[in-house]
Length: 124
Image 1 (cartoon, helix red, strand yellow):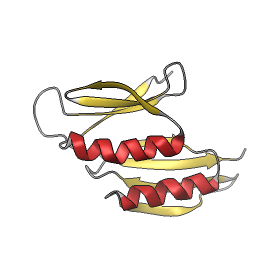
Image 2 (image 1 turned 180 degrees about the horizontal axis):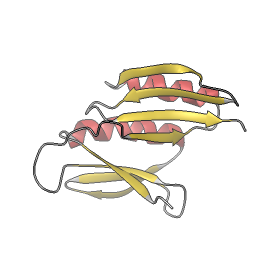
Image 3 (image 1 turned 30 degrees about the vertical axis):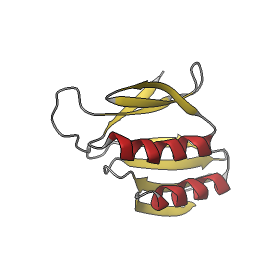
């Protein structure tokens, strides 16, 4: 049902470096670019992610309780995404590890603008 998720940024160039690297690790590239935003994903594939300067011209801000979850292929990719995010100016929100019961393995981090993301794999 979800086609893509958009997150706000106040520095599109910085966000592009961060999300280009995250998308490359996930095996996708940019599918849309314009002066105020960029989107990554695969047309016709799973949901994509975009970053944009807010349309109303006001500064981007982080939604409390909002998080974008990125589906990884395995635990190793969860760990790579987490380390990659931190190396690109992201902040830790929960190191890679099992969460709950049932094989859910995840890592939590924020992008340089403060948007919260999660990389996960579920082995159900």
